[in-house]
Amino acid sequence: MRIRRFSSFDKTIGSDRDTLVGEFLDVSTATDHEFPNELGRQRYARYIHAVGCLQYGDKFLADLEAVYASGVVQRPTFPVGEAA
Image (cartoon, rainbow, N blue to C red; front, side):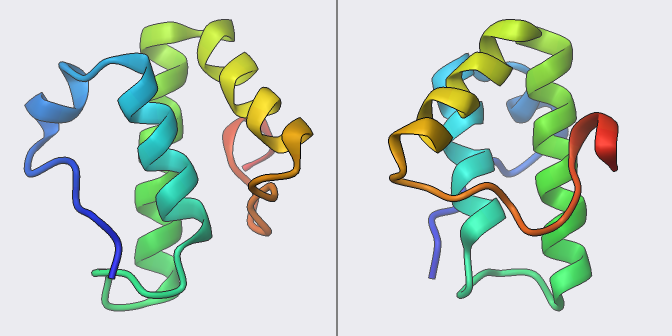
């Protein structure tokens, strides 16, 4: 089961960039998660992505791209960001 990092909206908004990047990567690739279904997991991932983009803009996106480029984590199979 994945680690839950946020218990409320205000905790998400007050988080640092590294935490948001980690949470997005974790939830977007989780197969064992706390959501009742796949759609719930995807919605939460999109929410984290949106908060990261709003708070940190291109730096957040660059952090994600660096992880994807390293091959450690694959891009989500569902659309996020501007493609969603």
